Length: 438
Image (cartoon, rainbow, N blue to C red):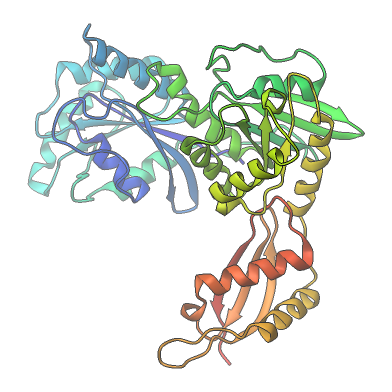
């Protein structure tokens, strides 16, 4: 089910980034007591009670002809357009300002649900200052303090009531949904056209042609697919067009809707740091992954070139050791016919469920070959029972005497042994430890 989107909006210097950090539980946004310091939207995932959602931190909205502030306003308006619910942050110490009223008018035109957070209310004696914000006419203002964490839970309770209920996926469960992610101009749209065998997506050499995530359903050999082409994700700070910067969130949402993610790399340019970051989104989301090296026709090669390029990928993408690598050319369509069979294979692995008794035999054999670790006090990890609790991605629980004794290196060893026994090609697998008393 797609995650709802929460946008944190307000004029500069009201504490939006501090509240963003409180909600996502990390210090991701830059926090500085200076108007306009957050110049770009920052994205992360939040969780509150049973709700998971995306959070957007925006630059402040200010009605001005100054270029930077005009861009920040445009970015915030884009965030508003995409959001399911908006947290409108105001500064309670300064009181209601003309800029707040103008921001309020922008929000009311959006027709989106809005919750007002009156920030910098650090103690109860200041709460009477919230009443003037009732004049904005968009609901009950809530006193909060981002710096001290006061009232954030109440704020999230109110925001969560506006999250869309029962967001239905419009595709059948048997439909394989695959998204294409990667930097701009790696040939994602060309690859979509090559897969479909027709010109269904606009193709251009100009980076950033694909502004939104585009769904294209099709059927091949009685299997239904949806291919989701996304705007290229560029490194923050190197892109100056608001709509392109906003494509990161849409790509993340596309990953959330996918079963399989095709991480597309430009063979001509090789691997850069941003490729690794982009692929990391898919890995962290627990999606099946195929690494696609496009534009292979443009590379001068000999009998060692492919093997050497593959080794570079393995060296750079250590966390994607399970992902198959496919070299192809969307332009010439060479080897494109191998892509869907690989997608089918990783999809099957993503949904593979292993019988419990067979799984336990594999774990017992693994422990026999390489005994479990001990701690400094001589206590040894004892694995009493192993079971698979879910698929997509396959997730296993080890019932042990003490979960703290499961070192990450031994967890990796068990993962490798499980992969050797059952394959799990193209899919991450999760191994968790739970305490089981005698």
